Length: 467
Image (cartoon, rainbow, N blue to C red):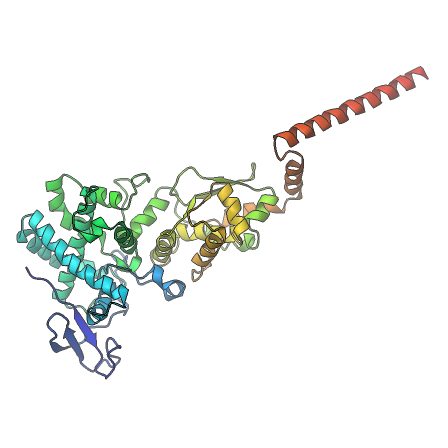
């Protein structure tokens, strides 16, 4: 079985820490980390260089914009498994660090690279032996240009043979991982990824990171002959693996990769196409947080759908409906990568960004979070309301605030809040009808006042009639 080696691109200078050469007219020394042999390689490009021009029909996998990346590098950096060409350069320093157990991340990368080979062998044994692997290799080679065109960065620096082997190894790993996850029971099977739930959770987080993607079309194409044997589609396996069974994702839903999938379940079928006039800044509700809006007569309600990131406002009822936000350990990674995808691929369809920006305007302190928790809009699994407020406020840092889908709703909310009538009505309701007993007392006092007034009027009429 032919398995690829991972080349290390080294600068011709004395520094071992610099990857690539800054001089385009020199040759790079390349270290084959498996054999230790060094050889020269003509430069075909460098990691990180943009592909120009991009194929707009195919390009869908991007490097996270630096303005967003620097806010939380860990949210965009795989913790355990490296997938695809945008992460290819990270494998070399990991191999160089072999034996250094103090660098746990590199140690994890190395273990996963070995585990990919194990999964390749298992997959081969399960389906047609080595023939299916050779078949996959030919299929990837046929679509190599399309796969390369799916990335916004040039992959010309990875030679064809290495590129095909990388896609093969990573694709089979993903397929075998999902097949094993589908079949797993309660008994341990001797596979770290199946026997240790913490590793499975980490891998799921890695597989939705924007820079850590494979084009879905090649996974689907490779799985097609397997699907006929198993009588199961890859879409079914993927939805089950990411636990998206309760979403509105349908057989007609199209997505480019796993990051796109987790975005689709939050926006699918819920939003019309943008009208540019709607895409306006919504600074109108800046400095008007949830606590202030609540005191100003705005009611809060959670939308019925558990996933769709919708926001709606009923001016007549003064009711602001907001999709539920589940604050747990994985939410930051999920939303940050979806938002990065939207900024790169859906700049005028950035519904998730608009939702998070709207939440950011509503939340300033832990009191705002507490209010939204009470209303069922936020489910706080992190415990501390202050932590949730800080996390939501940081999610928007680095995201351009040049416009959002909810600008019109923000304006309606602001107008409702500014109304003195709505504020007065809210104060009266809270003072005199805040609960059942207060309401009964208020009604009783009102009736007593009316009876006293009637009695007074009656007495005056009697006095006047005698005269």
